[in-house]
Image (cartoon, rainbow, N blue to C red; front, side, top):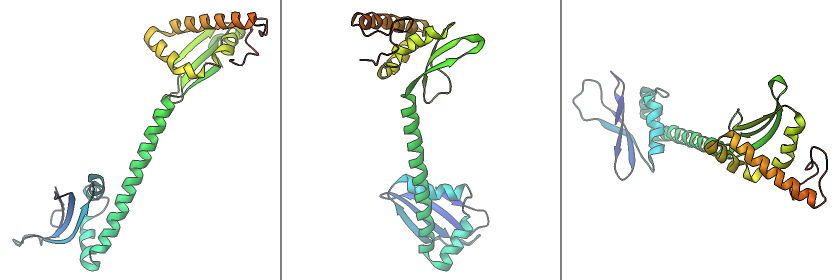
Length: 209
């Protein structure tokens, strides 16, 4: 790979030689003389090499400036610039990895919400942290019906992902029926044990035990 500028004496050449090597070469325009390397650096990986190549190819740094700087102050000056570009590129990659890891965690984190919908409807929803919309929702005409299911469902957090998988495969209504059936089983058990709160929300005081 060669990066140069028309009418410029300088060009940046990339090659593979036991690793990635970049050379900054000088050759006066119109000269038949062989280019002369005024700076060279071997990079341990493609990422470090590409950081400098990208900066030059995208005109973030002017190759003429690099050439004149090197000829005036020696290769150490360009080494410092390369070090800074490599470090900045590594920091960006690390930030991207952290962002992607956070997105993956958020996608696997599901929260339960009891909300008020339009037209007086009362909603119970499961929503991934990575999404602004609910992944599953059930609607009730009365808040007490929603809260009755919520009393049971809020203690099933370790199963929320499983519930969403079920909804994705079988539909929201199928999941709603499954959850309500499990709620009824738990209500009967808790009542039989004499621990039910009574009324329309027998699991109101239940703690998932």
